[in-house]
Image (cartoon, rainbow over all chains, first blue to last red):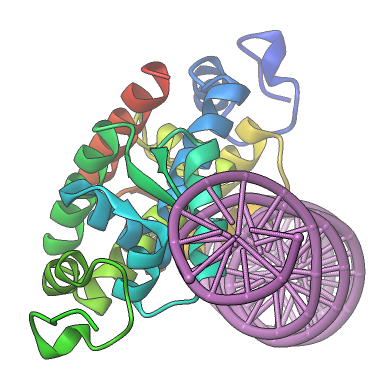
Length: 120
Length: 120
DNA sequence: TATACATATGAATATATAATCATACAAGAT
DNA sequence: ATCTTGTATGATTATATATTCATATGTATA
């Protein structure tokens, strides 16, 4: 049996040192989950399109649906997702609700994502 | 009936100009899908962890599973996803397969994602 | 008040996907 | 050749989620 470097490495494993060091550098679980959650929200075409639209102008729900040729309900559901992630904000004006970006970092993320796929 | 600015705006809509301009700036569908696909891959905790590990060192499948306390099969399945997205590469050495990052842009994306969640 | 309109929401459906299990495959080792 | 080990993969299951439909809510207007 191989000698183990620390008590985190008590499993039978071919490279205990690597595992030991890797375990020490693991990201906190809640950080991982927040990160995954953020990317998951960007991992949908409809939401990407909505965010891209809102990056240029404030829009009401009806116009977003029109622009994307999608149902009002589908857009509304997705806006709720984006709202709960605090990526968009809204203001009410009469019957209409106007949405806009709440967070410019998202645009940066999308831009970098675009760079990534262009390098592929 | 309101006057329409272009023939893209023949629907009944409260703000035809906005829709017209927004439609003109819409991202190409394949770009949207590639972008969404990239973020979707990052939108999973296990894959985030794997990428974060590989950002620091080359690792074999067994050690990744050990480090993350997960089954070998689960890791192998996820590595296949990461491989087909060309985010990781591998080399074989005897029975072992060593994985490493194939694309440094991903690390940048993750770093920026981390910044995003820290600003929240 | 009654009606029309913009938006939100719950239920239902269809689809995607992550993990597990069993097993196949490939490469030493005996 | 057989056995063991590391990895890959197909099938299955459970869970998540995107869209649609029907409807509720809220606001303006006739």
